[in-house]
Image 1 (cartoon, rainbow, N blue to C red):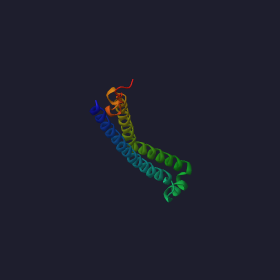
Image 2: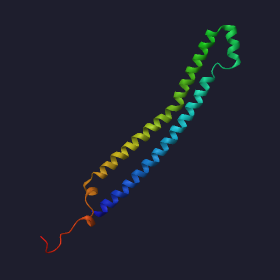
Image 3: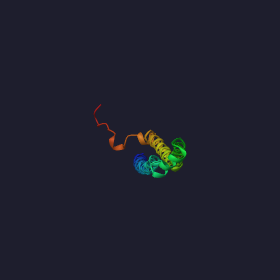
Image 4: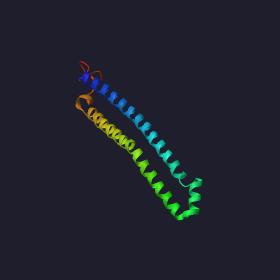
Length: 130
């Protein structure tokens, strides 16, 4: 029975280590996704800020140029969603794995073999004392 408890503790320690590694990986994935979003935000804010749209605005009108700029910003927004979607999916998968590890830990912690007291902690009655 003591070996079951020790084995359970070792497995729990490994599960906790795996969870910590997965959380670290998730932070790295989130950082990459944030970097990509930042790049796209910079590109979106730069739409229409060059000399070309100013000249085109004088020729075809500001409304037409504004429409083109809106289309360009929408395209960049869609490109951003496409670029970050794999990162978001990976974060969801990591969350699912962490959740599964939590369920595995709970199963071990709630098992009778793990919860049984260690033999050294049981109190033996003294002889002759009643």
